[in-house]
Image 1 (cartoon, rainbow, N blue to C red):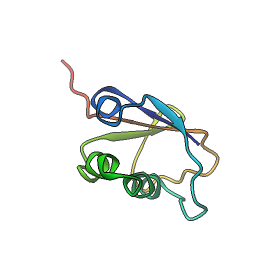
Image 2 (cartoon, helix red, strand yellow):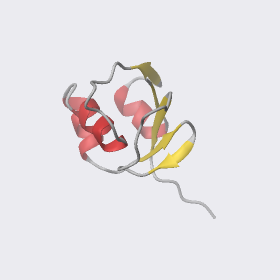
Image 3 (cartoon, one colour):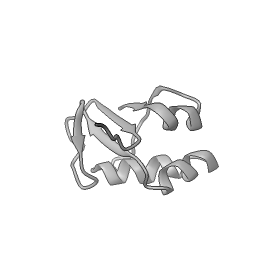
Image 4 (cartoon, one colour):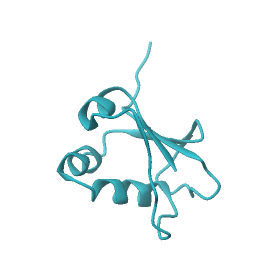
Length: 82
């Protein structure tokens, strides 16, 4: 699956996107986050903070959203606007 990182997440992880082979048990956005957090200390710090949002195939997604059929998951910091 293509994983894309935006803004401060991209800066902290040092990569804007990557292809990741997810384990079969990764079935939801939360499962992907748990998998990514286990990779190294930087990823653990970024993903354990919980201060980010996710999108599946460019649509906002909740943690419990299933990833079946999705080709891309993106993570980005919360947005504000005015």
